[in-house]
Image (cartoon, rainbow over all chains, first blue to last red; front, side):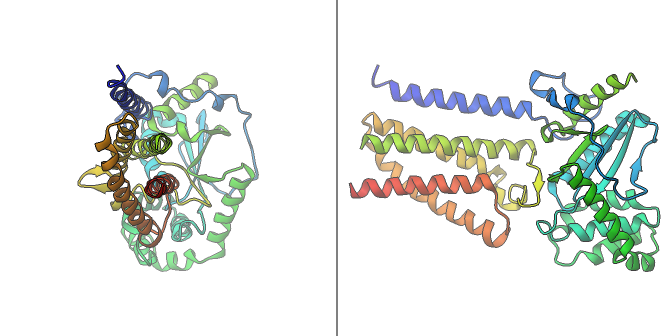
Length: 238
Length: 134
């Protein structure tokens, strides 16, 4: 028996390691599940109950008018504080688009600038680019463009020409865009969104609020966020 | 000598847990939130996090599991295991130094769990050195 004991210990540790890896991999769902093709909710995929029990926060107002997508009458209002250079924000971007497609008019999305300076050297430039395009009514187009190409520009030394190229592609008036990028109006909007984030206790990105209550970070994968939104819709009686 | 192998086994278990966590983060694409102070997932999403299609963290988990197995075998009197343990730990230490260099000077971002792994490997090397002089 004593000769077998070390092998038993090794096998037990191997078994525990493999089974915990298997369990954790299953309980953290892949970021992008095609709609209508989700596995049935397992106990591990249930969102944490804390979200619906929190009181709704109001905080100080952010930049006005806010960048919103979806009707103001939507029963579920999602507010994201994001940084264009943050990789998890880049990964959350397609999830949010998927939620917008799935929930349609029942979901209104607001994006708030929260560039993490100085952690991300280009985050402020990216936020300014999106806001400058926003002054010409192309905020969401620029927002999608910057997130979709995050890996292309994040490691570049000078990102301004890249963002100008995106502005050109989006048929933004580039001369005006170049003036607006450095304008007080753009800087003020970013500052106001940042102030709102700080007043709500935002410490990192992406931070998401649903009807004023923060969604825990672990509930941001598509499968969990979908359940959180469904719960919110149920609460609203829609 | 027994204390040495028990210490090595416990350290390698910690390393295994750390490397498994990193592997799961890598495989599921789930990354930790960025904050003002941390460098979030730049390290895990860098080109250096994968070797020949295999996440480096998974290679690390396999290495820690091997160290654990060898330490347990050596504890129960299998002398060959003790002899393999030393060069393996030395090799792991050099890999950790290389990865630390990549984080500090190439990616210029640190990954907390990668640093924990480097610390564990350094402790393992210290144990190996202490054993040589005892």
